[in-house]
Image (cartoon, rainbow over all chains, first blue to last red; front, side, top):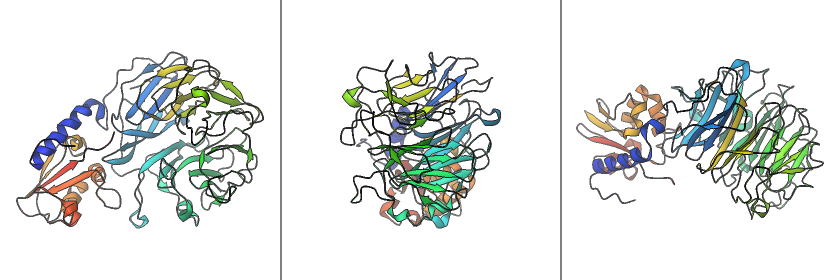
Length: 405
Length: 91
């Protein structure tokens, strides 16, 4: 870009002015100002991470939503965790500036103020010869492990916090895995994007990566084994390899059964990833990025199908949510409240469930529309429209006294 | 003294300042180390954990892009100015 100035100092000043204009200081600061959310004692929080900032929405009934002003404007928000364990209302957010790199911040007052530790929460050690590029996943573990938070990162790596998400330690078992040199990058980058700590067995963990597939640890993350058998990889010479699959998202139901939305293919595993079987029959297409499971009811999962990898739009340009209540034997399509036509994709983390009863289902599109359902995905209301590309949404039932910043 | 100038947007992680007079530094690396010691968050905005300048952070010494000189080892002398500019990038 030609700025029409001469000296470096003038150039710096001009760039500064341009960026200052683009990034209004009260919105762009890393410790942003309180936004103008007015809802008192909201029951539900929906956090929306986009290509250009974070929006928070609150509701008392999941039908009428108040939407905040943007925070971290012009910085992408690819990962959000909402930690409501032990009475917390903690937001953990992965922020990435195109210029100044990634970081993790947290807020205990629903976005009124943010804290970034002096020491980076997630950073490779000197000898690792690697640098964090993007935080893809922030996942508070179960109620039984109230201080454990997991993070999935690009380059492909898994991180564990035991202090509620303030500092994380690299999982060396996965980082030094012998398959590592064969893992690749999907279009969005090479990252560990799904982390599934088993609810009952604290030693059992699954992670999924694109590309690489699903890996399982039975010893709390000390060592990892391949767990992708049965998941297809039509783009490889061996269409059913033991590793190398482009798994887009995995999730576990209340009984620990696993579900996968693959790069072509929807699968389930009843034996901790030992073997996967197709559950795509009954869906209009087997491509997509989203896989959600019910927080309490076994056998219930949601997907948002796209036609295929060469036609990444919803069938007939009509976004719809498909739900199974019998672990993929049958699927039901729901589109009440969704637009007649929408040619935008829903990315893997741009969908979420809350732990309400009935469970809420949420998703956002690359066209910047965000939808919420308070009835397990059967009908939706529009929460926001024309935001930047939605990268991540997360929702939670707040503890009483929550007030969004 | 060496003068180091930051973009305004980084002032919030640099004690509210954009200009620093640094003494006892003889390279860009030493200057950035000095600042990172005082402001660790600023340090990682400019360089990743391998110590490399972030891709869209540009540093000039008296008008010369250090990437076209000796990188972070580019020498600085009394009276020179180090200018940190974020490149115009993104969409």
